[in-house]
Image (cartoon, rainbow, N blue to C red; front, side, top):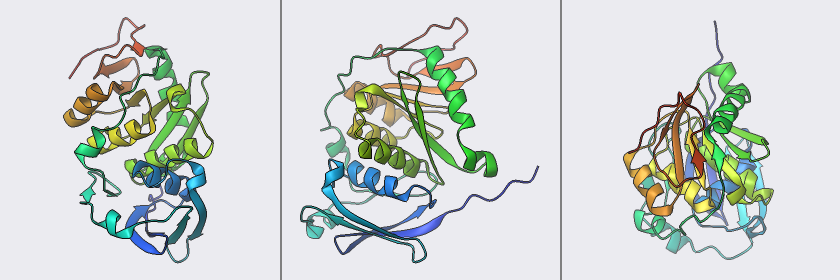
Amino acid sequence: MNKGCPEEYPITLVLNGYEIAVFQLTKQDLEDWVYGYLFSEGLIICEEDIEAISIQEDQGVIHVQLAQPFSAEDFFGKKKHYTAGCGRGVTFFSMTDVKGFKKNTANVSYPLSFLLKKRSEFARMTPMYIETGGMHGACIIRKDGFIEVREDIGRHNAVDKIIGYALRNRLKPEELILMTTGRISYEMLSKAAKFGFPVVASRTAATKQAVQLAKYLHIEVIGYLRGKMSIFYTSSGRVFNDLEMTVGGSS
């Protein structure tokens, strides 16, 4: 079977006239990505913090005007951390910054069977992956079963896009599950923690550093959601095993 090639483009993010970086992105849902990335980096805290966005796809540039002054000197004075994996990105958050995030206190509970069912639905809602076999996806899931999906060449970008969607629609993080197709790395878990997701799940693994951070911040992390299988990396009690055949574990 012939599949199309996944697309990626170099896109420059310009913030209040200052070039932040060049990112490799898939062009869909770029406005969501802007909100999600800037939120994850601590440059905005709500939708109203962005005054204007101009997306020039033909030139590969996104211009953003913040409602508040932006100190380029302070921002660029921070150490850059390049993210692991495809669609290589950059973050300016240090481990010290991340450990200062609030510990998650959401009082929610989900059966494992619900996550597995939604994982299957999620897989059917990723048209770019189905077309190319080379894309990542991220979605948010509400307890009533609602799913919203975003895709990108990079797993970090996909997560930023879905965070941006949630932020723009003023969704409450404590009422949402974050699910991704990619590995849950330290920086991925950091994005989830910054927004406030109490449960993070993936069809693949979580890194040791991500699990350590999740335990510290009281975030439930479930990996290898496939068929009736899963791995419980943390045990905050927000996901309970209601399937006899599930393989459980801890790290």
